Image (cartoon, rainbow, N blue to C red):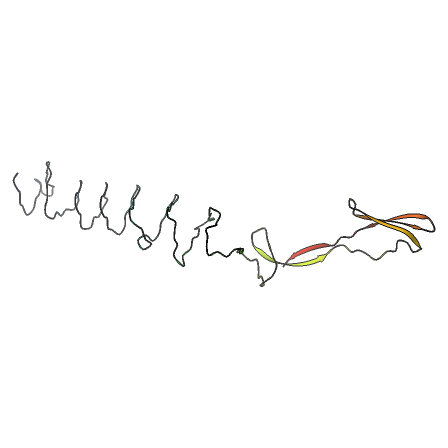
Length: 215
């Protein structure tokens, strides 16, 4: 096979590309505005446009888009990846570590955690955070409202009036006894007096009610 050494190579027509049906082996530097085909070896420079096919080796660039799976044999650090946007589940086989001052939060909706939380550290037990409805003084008793917020409560005692005292018998009596009827909330008092012998009187128990008032 003979060697061909030329300064430039053009097609038969002005502006057309040369036709090399048997291929060409270039040992030096090749400069072109476009390229189609397989490349074996190191490629140095800037590739502008779409690269279709498999690439084996190191790729260094400012941005890249992959429609298939990407396998990484090394470690991706935070300095290398500033954010991960996933529409599916991210599986971390060795766990996820979050740097100091960083947080886990939802863009919208509710964040759901799985597990019993037995392996969590740095969390104060017995403490729950709520949103206050109004100003709550330190140490004040609160109640959880239907909207999930908490509000201060003041305990007051009120109820129906028991009325004035009543003497059920003003004469001399003996053999007194009393019982409570839980079905009708009544007190029954039986006694004996010297005028009519056996008597009974029914009294109503007035129960006080405890009321919690929201401030």
